[in-house]
Image (cartoon, rainbow over all chains, first blue to last red):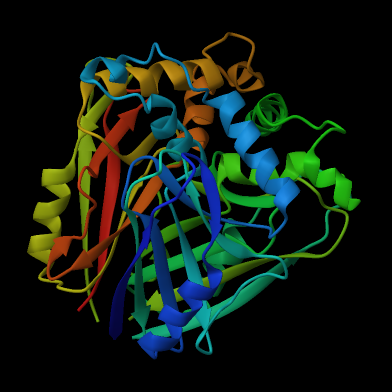
Length: 137
Length: 137
Length: 137
């Protein structure tokens, strides 16, 4: 079994944003030399997600508006008594899950026709990381 | 390390539906010959999920009604400006996550007492695929 | 490739609760002897979740209150016609997902600065299990 580990760093200008990362993850898979296996692509922070969705800007707006409806920003989270103001971002991370596992077949992300990877930031404007861990042969 | 990859195809008569897939996934695990490892069971589309839940039709109705409440069908999604009408299905996929990873112990899905696998379709009536990727030894 | 499987059992006094499990999972990773790989940490029940979040009790209250808003307790779930009363717990499990996959690097959970593991119980007061399956080398 082989393994390969890489870290991506994001620093968004906006507090909330969606960033395509398929090309970066595919490059890491190629660097690993692994032909058959799995890759974990996971946020290392509690206020961001990694998702698989469609490369369509209207849909990205829908996703962010929906997250705001289901887990809204508001001042009254208990978490804010610690001095934080990002309670909603923790809940949005739970809503969309922090990670995906992707299949690698013949050295490539074995994706469906429209499947693309995205980093979804809910509390940015600072350095945040994603881990990509590839295992296989 | 060994690996084994298989694809399941679904074409539901109804637009939204829940389909048991445990038997098909267990057959793929047996075919792999893998005794100890992990299997990724993941939707290859952005408008369907793979979940682990209970084989109980009342619960299935609860799950679909809940998804409709949290991520309702409506004409006003930005995504619909592209000609699509399935914005809700993308959000339901995010709500329930697209995939599960299952443990394989002594050649079998190492499941809890009621854990069964389901394909959850939110925008069917066309061919859609699930990938099952097994790795281990 | 090596693999290692362990099971954790929880029996909460309260019906709903959040329990830190990072130390137990890290002990299992050390026992496995695996230096590079992945660990699946997954609920074996349909009414509990495993999540990665922050060790902060205010946030835990926010998480439980949010789950109650998005997937509330109520008597009218179809699932309750079977004699059950935990329809909400099944939906909360779907909301937060049942599992996480964690990266192992140099023999340790390769976590971000605040990432801790938690078992989230939505229908406790009875024995329930989590599986930890480690694979790698």
